[in-house]
Length: 216
Ligand code: SF4
Image (cartoon, rainbow, N blue to C red; front, side, top):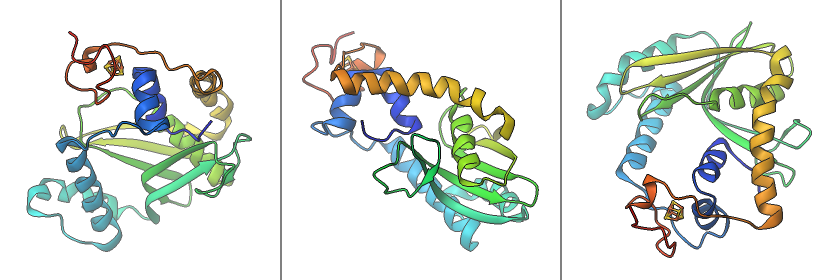
């Protein structure tokens, strides 16, 4: 089984067949949508603003105040911070063969009392367990930290969803992810990638060979 990320879990759960072709066999290329391109550009603009003080481009000046607030937080800042762990939940190098799960935090701020994790979101506000998983990576990578404060910044709606995690919650926090990862592992073991039709089949899936592609 290859190492997994939060987006792998989501993609696999949406449709195992699509996941297999686009992320395992790589025989179908997921086209880069305008939405993805915009998300990447916004992330780069935040990275440059927070780490170097580079002003946001004209199309993103609305984000300046958020960027300035992040810059003003006291602490050591790491943009696009890569965290990988092995099966024993220990931190490993991003490229290690032992890496079992991986994630890149948009911004990590080390403060004296806690770690702050920030994730910029350009899409529609929704519930996500991603923050919990990233907090787990952070607890593994920062053994002296007992509190992680995570936040999604929903840029479209200018809202922040915050969550605070404590080290003593780590075993409980892992439970849902272990269940989800074990389903993915079983699919790899059994090489079983069933099609799971949904609204995505109609024009939103690049797996043109699938019998459900284009079907209402
Ligand atoms: S067309 Fe639908 S069922 Fe087929 S791979 Fe794509 S998402 Fe899955």
